[in-house]
Amino acid sequence: MFRTKAGALAWISALWASGSTGWAEIRETGVWWLPRNVSNFGHEIDFIFYVILWLTGITAVLVFGTMIYFMVRYRQRAGVGAIHSHGNNTLEIVWTTIPVFIFLALAIYGNEMWARMRMEVPPADALQVAIVGEQFGWNLRYPGPDGKLAKMDSHKITKDNPFGIDPADPDGKDDFTTYNDMVIPVGKAVRLHLGSKDVIHSFYVPEFRLYQDMVPGRVYDFVWFKTDATGHFQLACNQLCGQGHYKMFGKLGVVTPAEYDAWAKGKAPAAVTTSTAAAPENVSVANR
Image (tube, rainbow, N blue to C red; front, side, top):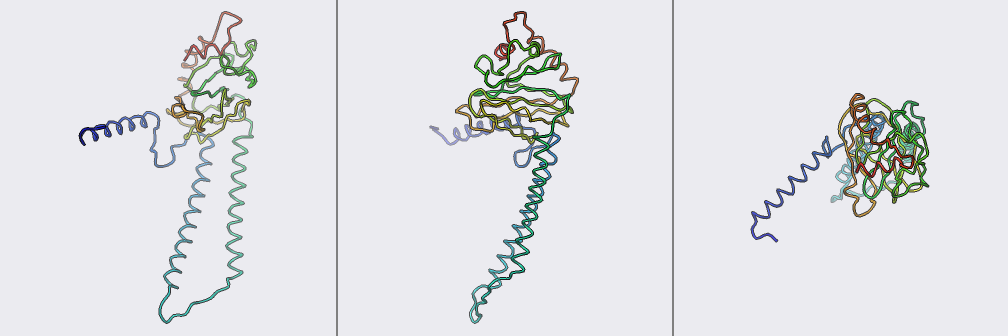
């Protein structure tokens, strides 16, 4: 393929440089540890992560340290007889009881955290955003000036109606749509209405510590979060959804409220139509 080693090295260098540039465009933090957290629930998720990490790390050091000590201390040596032990009931009870209480504490804490993330009702003034995954991109719909989002029906989702909304729904007349471009205001609760048009997709933003599968035929409207820092992130699909899965990512910007208002005002006029037969979903195709 390459006539000289210099040519091969040049090709590899160019490939590495392009890959490094790609990472820099979609990831603000390093890839060797957790990305920075910018959501309200992320702090608790990180806390339990580090608790488990320290527990397992200390346990690993103690277990392997004990194993190494016993291997050296009781190794086979000439003139030294073997020691036969049938165990110690007290020790058995202790090292069984302690992990039980640790696991119970982690399970109770994790369940409480999950309940707040998925079962707690979001604030009434939360920004409603509808997101429908498809092979291979993200359809997004925002409420217009009235602040109301048209109701999403998974049974009505089609190629021309990715959000499954009723064209006659008055709440959807001023909605506007985007494709692979999500913008939200910092400090404001955001309630998602998630759906899928074809196969299983997954809404995944590492910096939000947020992951939710989206199964066709269902609308998930219980996922919500609130950010506490601005930045530019990547909206990725975390389910293998087909041959084009690798390219299914969109831009996600967390901006100031003033910047969001200016962005929304620039998008909203495109969603207003003069024909009663025109539906907001047609705008999503036009915005692509």
